[in-house]
Amino acid sequence: MAESYDAIVLGLGAMGSATLYHLARRGVRVLGLEQFAPGHTMGSSHGDSRIIRELYFEHPLYVPLVQRAYELWEALERDAGEELLRYTGGLMVGSPESALVRGARRSAESHGISYELLTHAQIRSRCPAFDPPDDYVAVWDARAGFLRPEACNQTHVRLAVQEGAQVRYEEPVTSWKTDGEGVRVITAHEEYRAARLVVCVGAWTKSFMSELDLPLQVERQVLTWFDVPASRAWYEPERFPVFLCEFEEGHQIYGFPRLQRGVKTAIFHEGALSVTPEAVARAVTTADIEALRGRLARILPELAVASVRETVTCLFTNTPDGHFVVDFHPAHPQVLLSSPCSGHGFKFASALGEMQADLLLNGRTRFDLQPFSLSRFVRQSGAGP
View 1 (cartoon, rainbow, N blue to C red):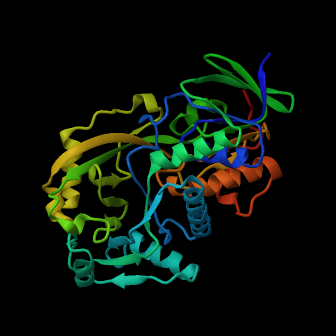
View 2 (view 1 turned 180 degrees about the vertical axis):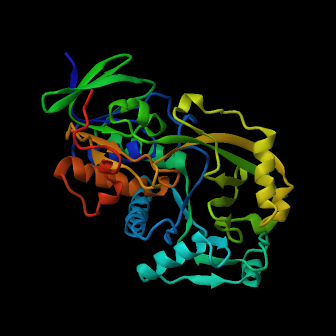
């Protein structure tokens, strides 16, 4: 006989681990299933650091959501007794008319958040490692910083287990099907039943929910850590904030201060596209590194010639409009599909976990989810498995 739960969460990356935690702490009998081992590097929740920023250039609608995320990350830190979030401030660098600078200012002004607009000279004075073009400016986001993704996921899972959640790693799901008003989930080892199912499988969403024919693309993202001399104190978090820089429309790089593995930077949204995670080239090439060096030379000239210490690939799962997906299956209201996040979602995981627990238990949330609706892509008559 299949084991029975109130809810099953598929995938224990950023969104799945947070949802598991918020369900468990409300007394829900919940099971988390993950196809890989803890801390794996096959998905989207690894790589030492993730930026969190309040002046959200993508759209002002994300600002209240990230503000709630800050509150929940800080609460999680207190409960765990572990540092998960570090504030460094953030530079949003580009020409005054760039989408990055204009979008960050729009979010600040829409929500009454104070900010500084720095000139080239002020950028150089405050952050000596940076030397952008003379006509560039930067929006200073005082609350920006970084999260430790592996520790965040581990903490969500650990505290969920303390609240009674059960977890199965290295147990890939082979199929699911409706069972009256509930669901049955079949894995390589067992069969489970639950009243509700939350699907948080990231790059595997399109194939796992193939009946919806979602217009998702998996993008290869290369992360690179550079080695800089320890004597260069200006790469430390006190002098080197998290940053994004836009050189021309749609072309950005981002990065972090020196942490244990070095100074991490990456090109944002220029990776090779695929429709499956299995088809993504995992090896990092010389061409990948040289492309990043060329962009770094325009803002961080010393870093651009530093030696490479480490590289890794991770996956973005992109929607056509860049917004998330958080919605119930159009044919099966007991199934919640969570968040192909288009490469900017990790910072929101704490809030999305809470929001998804609200949806499962109450059918509503404090946030307007219409921008994240499946109806953008899927007719409401969509068939199930």
